[in-house]
Length: 123
Image 1 (cartoon, rainbow, N blue to C red):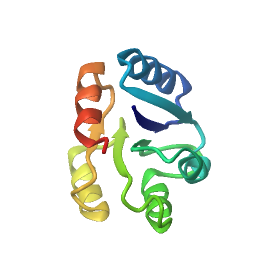
Image 2 (cartoon, rainbow, N blue to C red; image 1 turned 90 degrees about the vertical axis):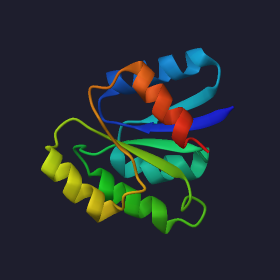
Image 3 (cartoon, rainbow, N blue to C red; image 1 turned 180 degrees about the vertical axis):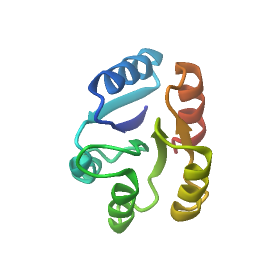
Image 4 (cartoon, rainbow, N blue to C red; image 1 turned 45 degrees about the vertical axis):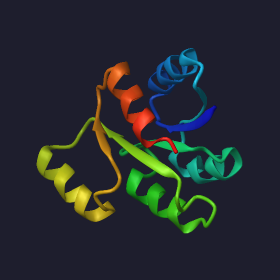
């Protein structure tokens, strides 16, 4: 069973995603609504995939990604970004900044598309 960590300040979004993923029977899901606690949660939970919101009140996804990559045990953990507030131009600039190997998905996202992305990126 793959373990997924959802880091999103929208608690209802995290709850819905968790419910949908656990319903499949393929995933165990934990959620963190505070970006600054994401690395601590990832170190504790050892997820196969981290779904990371780009914009949160206490920090942003790029800062969290950098902190995750600084931890040797998390360096190779797959990350998928989610964002609702970026233009195509901003997304392109972000891809250059973080590297094209980190997928960026737009919210709102259907359960089907999210499950497809998780299936593709969860190692």
